[in-house]
Image (tube, rainbow, N blue to C red; front, side):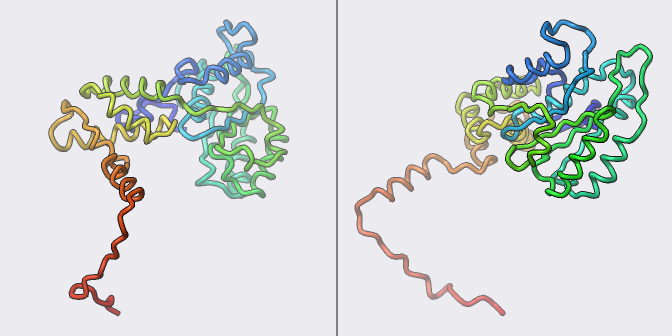
Length: 292
């Protein structure tokens, strides 16, 4: 699980990924419920009380913090594990869109779940492992059925965190075995605030309201898409006239493949015009059949 460690060269979505549950943006209800599961109603304990921690299922639109929350949860659970290697040995992260077959469930996940757990005498580290299965709604039905059996057999030593965009694509026997948490699309203000923070941290010139509005419009509630778009524009600026240059709305529109407002206005004007339509005559001189 490489994303739990720090790397010198990272995409901005990884570099500025929240590291703790408190840093997750605009998912207050979900984070509060998770903390109650970890620390009880008071939420003030220093060591998680996870004896009855259930399997979890996070669902909602992309880019809303589901995977980030799962990784932050693992840090909270295994904060006393010591070295990064010890932490990585407790967590298996898989992307089901790439590894979606029944073979992965029967071999990779089952082998990890069957491995022995190093139970600490001080009991500061939970006596189980975590499997994070991202994009679980992309798993084939047969693989989901096999996964259900794996969850049943190894629930004492392994907890599963399933992450998906569409809850309806996960079979009911799986969803019924998990505590479900819905992640809502991020608001425009939350995305704008994060963009300003990232731009300031990277030494960019202050973002204009027009630039922020365009990025927020292109992101449609997806913070990951917004930060990636901002980095693309930053690389464009750095490759032309330096990173200190201000970002123009035209650059954002082109990077995000947005139709310029002037083109939209002209299109609407032509559609609503009462003028007689004019047929376009082909240029016979330049038109010819394709070569065979």
